[in-house]
Length: 311
Ligand SMILES: [Zn+2]
Image 1: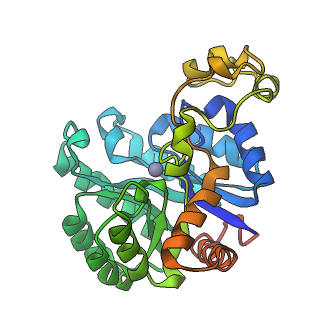
Image 2: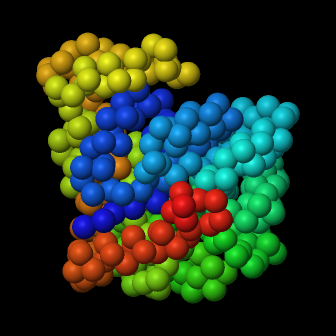
């Protein structure tokens, strides 16, 4: 079975130090491609390097709404430079967020920064990976004003209403599903999934977040133990850390002792199969058949000119 993780963050400081190992684990689990999204300026170089060392990594550069207050005056030029010098890169993660946790980010600025990046994605014909929380009315208005999108866009971790799906699909949206759907009441989640046209559904992990519900009881990072010391050898913790990698520092020295592992519910791309199983069960579909459909859909949206999929 071939899987495609349509959206995650392997450059996240919580897992960056072991990203090499996580990619290998994902590949062993049948994940053929991993779309890695930078969320702020300091991510972009890390994501670019990850893509250069791993054929399976599709790089995405973007400024996520939560990180807008940290942007430099030159952020947009820098983003353009990264995208122009990396033809295999898509745009992401970008978006709008009206949830209470994003209240520190001025919403007018969010809209402006989102529009600038959407325009850029259109100008250079790349798909965009979009975050939208509690802002679908504005999102739809903006998308309408920018339509059409010949290179497409995906709404990552889609948990919006089923009723919004048809107009978003009409605008060209792909709907990417992650473990964020799992805490939702099953009948509601099922209604959303059933509303999504089969040729527009994608699977993602949004790692290191959105750990599938079925894995949460273990209460710790699911990929544990002996391989950690190998990771240190491969990545060389200190030299490679634009991030300080604090969370894993102690782990890297404690080979095989899982009691010392962080008790955080961190996710990783190999868990894409758990999202697949959940979605297949709610859609009452065969897992293999759904995997094939989602894989082809992901190939479609990520087959832009210059992409690794096209090569
Ligand atoms: Zn994300």
